[in-house]
Image (cartoon, rainbow over all chains, first blue to last red; front, side, top):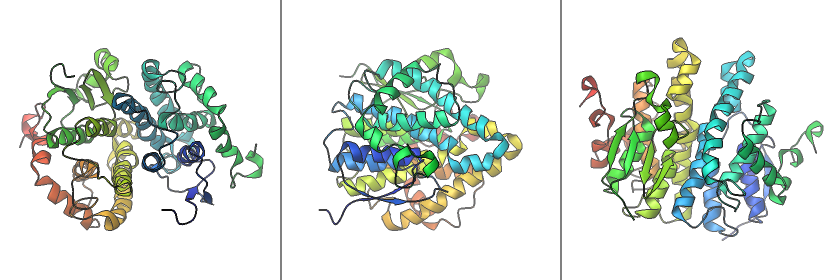
Length: 189
Length: 216
């Protein structure tokens, strides 16, 4: 029962916002963007994605099999709880400017070390098997963050390979930070 | 197709482990505990053996139905999908979203910022302030949200995954001496939860690895 289009409160550069934009694009859900300038990070984007999955079930973002669903959620949570919160804007402000880069790199490297290992048993073409899932929606934005913080991705061939495949997909392309309504001109694609 | 009891890798004091212990208790799932001490021997989660089982080197991890799952909410959602009663998530998608939102607020927005490895990084003299800041900041947001979602519990009147996240986080708040006066809804719900059997049996003070001086 829809009253007007969904409204997404989004920051072009926020990896959390990007995850949700990808989901909306994959499910062909037309929406309006209200651009917000982030001082407080969300962290509840997975709840949004799960809601979209339950109310607009095609195409699927979670597999049918409970064990594979668990793998998708595990990978998603690893990123959304285990990496992203530790290198978000408000935390970086707290550690102080001179420490920010090292801190962010440490958070990402530590998380990617674990993620690379896990993906070696779960991944097919994408994070879990051969279908795009919520895990992939978390991965690509996190790799973009890794790039921003100059993390060397050589130790993470599986992560890199999956990311490359994802960025070729339309939904990841249209939702990319470089082409949002609030993308500053100097960062626009 | 179960081969033996599920095995939970847990640390008595880990709030994330406690969430899963509550879920297992609520769903009446019998399990074995393998205690992983996060501070002893440089941290038993870093052992090669444990790392092979769970590359994230974190507790909890649950070995069940032939697979090993890490990340407490992923574990709880799996339990919910395979052992659906009693429910830990409401039927209505909007209420489910509220449960997940509250759970995520705690599990992504608060707990990771005050966990052991982060506190190690900020240094001993900063730990208390850092942890208090993370919790207060999160609880400010949570108290507000709960005012529109809560009934007897976090979302309506049934215990849900959100409550499994709340009680352990309040225990952390107590440990870090956070004043809970500004959070009457959080405090009230927590009190109701601690009266429940599942929250009681799974409490850090009565686990197989609870040190004698902290035992109830």
